[in-house]
Length: 127
Image (cartoon, rainbow, N blue to C red; front, side, top):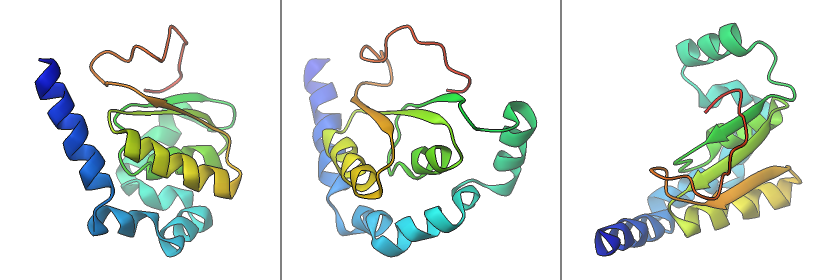
């Protein structure tokens, strides 16, 4: 099991540094999120989030398997307190770099979505 888990981590770390994934981290891509955070969500999804959460300000949101972290960035820009977790250390490192450059306050954690061991027992408004 540990070998299979490590293979998944290695694959996602490698993918994170691929040209395809780098396109999600360009200045243009990040500026588009800054200009319109809702644009990272499908309109129906964003409508449902608004319906059930209302204002995002000060909501606690956990995004497991955060991938490109666009949803994480959007939630932060919308006023939420966000925790991003991913099995790929490279994904987390890349997202931390962007958040630091933008001065966004986001909690990042390298973690397996199946266990979420580093998250603790916090209560979240949305996972």
